[in-house]
Length: 212
Image (cartoon, rainbow, N blue to C red; front, side, top):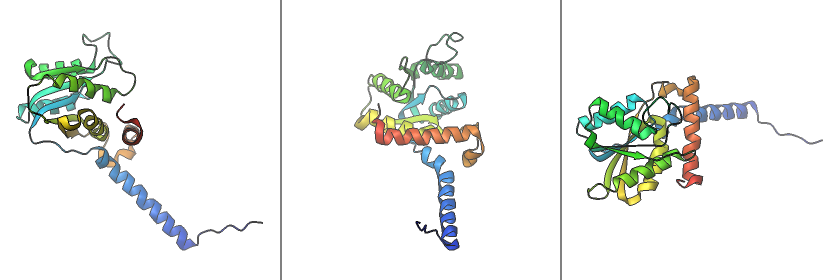
């Protein structure tokens, strides 16, 4: 027979307390970690990820209207739905047209289409944006604010910094999603799916994917 050593009731209590504390830290800290808002007060360029909601596109317009950027660059891959219903084939153009309809002058919008991509769509979007911004006659490093949805911010900032390197200083303007409460994300299926997926994806981006 083998003897099994088990914790005393005090040990179980301590273990349970530590587990509860760790769980609370993860639940409360996950969203702030994934949404590191670190915006420039004034940016040369705003990069708008084209797949985001109209609410977030409207924030990019506010950045322009209130004088916090000179140019908006929309970036995105080909549409994955609705292509036969729309005259535009990619998210970059959908976002750009939304901005134009909202009153942003066409000459202040750059469209960075990344084409058809099955994987690494964030990466390909920023590659397309970098190529498009290479045409700007502005001193380097550029000050860039990326406008995106809250929990996607950590991954976007990691990828953008890998892509632009010393050519740009990256800031983030992150808008809270309206489909769940970020302070209680674990109480909804959409919040749980979003946060868990972004935790996995951002960790993968740091340690394994090297931006590719």
